[in-house]
Length: 107
Image 1: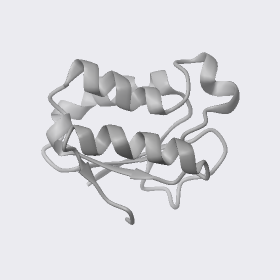
Image 2: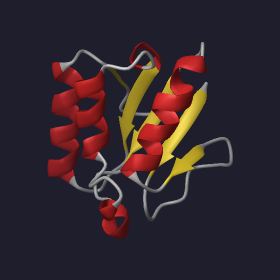
Image 3: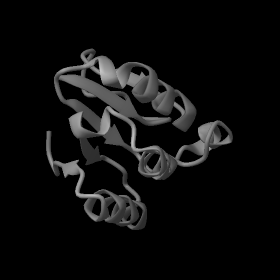
Image 4: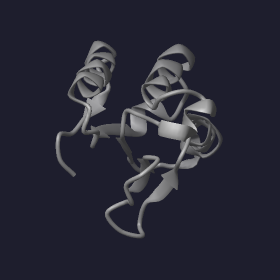
């Protein structure tokens, strides 16, 4: 399993995660390399990008862009949210559930 940790402040749980600080870098990773993976891609998202927001906005924009582009990697993606922003998490869940994408509350 490939693991993508998207957060401007918190460290990934361990060194098996690819880390993205910005929305742009996370999307770049998914769009360039995502279709090369035969296995699942676990994507754990924070909501608020802090100073990294200048590079694509808050992390909910990753979901918005994936929804718009419908890239080949989507069937492999499993979403998880580790944000401390409850409203942001609910908004991100709404996008995932609306699209019938895979979601896990724990990993």
